[in-house]
Image (cartoon, rainbow, N blue to C red; front, top):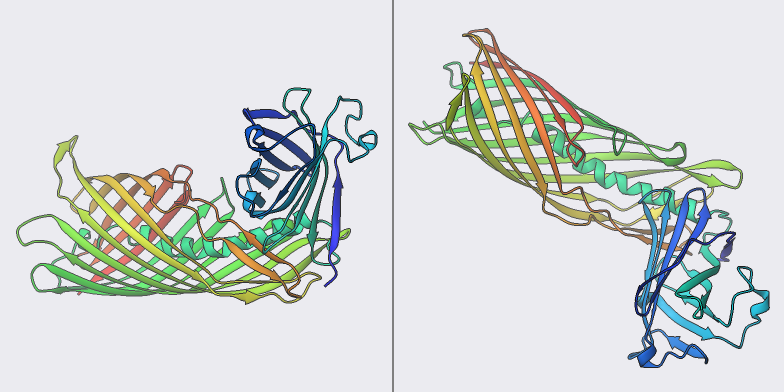
Length: 464
């Protein structure tokens, strides 16, 4: 397929700085808030001579080119494109072989060299030109930068930004799994009043919302039943349905919905108040995306449907109240959760520049350490207050790979790391409507992190 070179001729260059004895840095302003940063390292003791021609070819060892780090960001911290020295095919330094009088940027500075870089990989091709002034301390001037993309795309960086938004399908699967786990099931089943019966059925509704770092709204509902197994065990199962809606860039949107199944086994050693619980969850979700991107002077849209599977397992230990203060009993707890998310491969339809996306898979691991303060307000009503610290142990999420539908241009965008830590505060009210029926209402707020900013749940539990 014929590739279109979209060139950015740069009108301004940020002040360049030296990172160490041989590293130079420059920043390109691409407009619309987008920036490109390049760091180039040269080794004067290993063959680099600023006054003569130097040539680097990819794969050479003991070369004078020691470093190349190149990053394009879209407005904030969203990384659209990265390159490093392993991507370099060739790098030329020529202080005499170019017509430096034709420099577009600062043509009056002293003797300097001209370099060209071509970098190739399995995704986008990046072409850079620049000038390095060795007489002025550590000045590095950008000259020209070009990208190659699908034929007809006039703004490659913007197209890549819309592609990067598809990573939210993976995030949607993780979020949908997390809502019931830390909403309706944020407490073990044995922590609810059994009302003197062997079995209990319930119906629950959950809501979660985040707006500070992303615009996400999630709702879920479930019904379940549990029963005593011997004197120390309780086993329960539940099934439910969940929906998440999210806005994407350039007027796009994503809607994910599906069903989930939960099983939980609780153990309380006879004669104690300790509770050990093991919970498992499987969710099957369908994500419909409407990806928006610029196509000439207008906005175009391509549509895709991705199937996502999530599998979660949580081990939790709840201690009895260890301290009493102000009528509240304070009981610590700890949990560890593993969630596997698999987003199936899919291909978009419609629009001027649809794309196909490869499968994504990632295992998220999370630990929580908290304390619950509980107090009986009356014979029928109990208040529980909680605070917990949340830590994510996994690192960067899965990369997003694929190609435009013609197969002419592939892309590989790095995953993003979760916010490692946050704190969540919550309250529960358990109120007996009658001798066999319990109403539970809970709400939580969290600091900025992977937990929902705000979440709430309400359930009716009937003992029999």
